Image 1: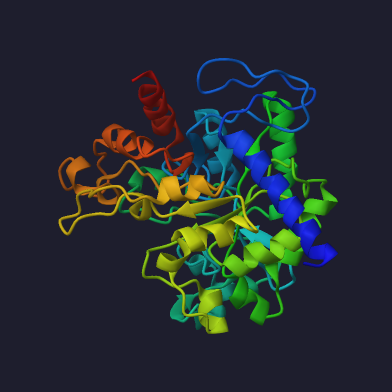
Image 2: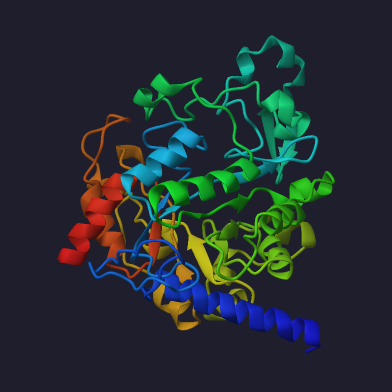
Length: 390
C-alpha cells in the first residue's frame, strides 16, 4: 500500500467513526449552537466541533417533504425541517449545459417542471438513452442555468398526491450552491445544525458527456468549507465508483445506494463488472464497501423482502452484516400512501389514501436500521417516538 492509499484508508476510517458516532447516538453539538436533543430524551453536551447525537433511527426527509410539496424545492426542504426531519435529502444533483449543478430527481424534467408549457423549449424534447434505458422528454444538460430558472416545479406523482398540485408553479429549480447557502441560513435561523444528503445522479452517463459530477460537487463543498470529515453533508450514489471517486476528493461521510438484489450498478455494466447488488450485500461485498464508504442506503426490500402476495417476509441478515463491518444503514423509501406500502398495511385501494404506516414503520425500525428516508417526516417522527417508547 503506497502512502496515498494509506492516507485515504485512514481518512475513510475516520469518516466511518464520525458517521457511526453521529448516527449511533454519541453526544455532541455544533460549536456555538444550543445543545442537540437525543432520541432518548437526553441532551448532548454543547461545545464539541461538528454535529453528533443524531437520533436513532434518523428521519431523513426524502427530497424534502415530498409527501406534501413538489419535490426538490425550497418549499419542500423547509417544510421537512419544520416537520422535524433530522436530515434533508437536498438534493439529487444533475448538471446544466453550462456546468452548474441543480436539484432534480432525474435529468429528465418533463415530469417535475412546467417545461412542456413553454413553447420556446418545445424543440428540445428528445429521446436519450440513460443507463441503457430510452427516455423521452427534456433534459437538464440541454439547458443553461438561466433557462432552467425560467421553469417552475410541479408535482411528480399527482395521482397519489393530488393535494400537492396546489403548489404547482410556486418554486423554481434550486442549484446545489443555493442549497449550501440555504443550509447555513437555516442553521443560523433555527439554532441547530441542518444536515443535507445530496446524491450524484447517473454519474457515468454525465461523465461521458464531459460533465463529471464528482469534481463539481467537491469544488462547491470546498468553496463553502463543507468538504471535511465533520461536515454536515452526507454524499450518496447508486454507482460505487462515484463514491470511490468522491472518497479521493473530499472527506465527507459517504453512502452507497443499493437497488434490487438482481440489479447491476450502471458503472459496473459499463466496466464489464458482472457483479450485482446481491454480490455487494454479501459479507465480502460489504467489507469492500466499508473500505471507502461509511454507510449503505438499501431499498427496504433488501432489509425485509416481500412475499409473492406483496406482504412482508422474514428480515434478511443485512442489518447485522453491515453493522459487523462498521456500516450504517439508511434504507429508502417510506411513504404514507397505499401503493407504496406492503400489502398487509394498506387500507382500501385508493391510490392517494393512507394505509397503516405506523405499523409499517414499527416493523422496519425493529430490524435495527439506523435511519430511513421518508416523504412524510412528521409521520416518521411520531412512529419513532412510539417505537422508542414501546
